[in-house]
Image (cartoon, rainbow, N blue to C red; front, side, top):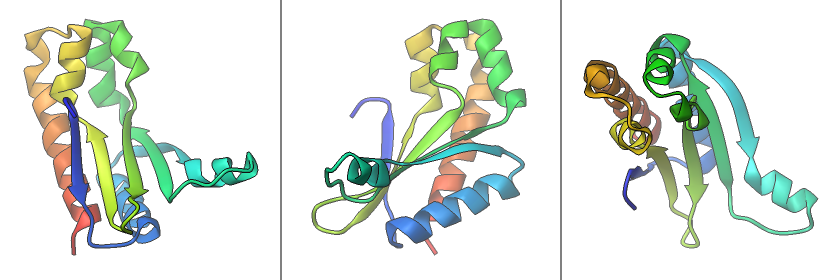
Length: 131
């Protein structure tokens, strides 16, 4: 899917989510929310394989992007989805910062910030997904 990076995880959904949250905090970012889609589906009387969304970020990275194009605020803070497929494999999916910038017409003057976010997001995801 364009603009979405998905990597297979070597841990189950719970452990992957815990590792992801810890890695985010270690890197000085704030976890704003953790949404358990599976639990919410169960409350609605439906079933959903493990699916959890983590919303996180740092205003120092996001604010300059919103100053360049406020509509990117609909996609910030950053998000990561940890989910399990029908075969029991766990995956971690994230929006690519460059794709978000392109989507919202954020000017090239923010390439350094976008690159830093992409690098940071990639490192966080890799550490959460792999030993």
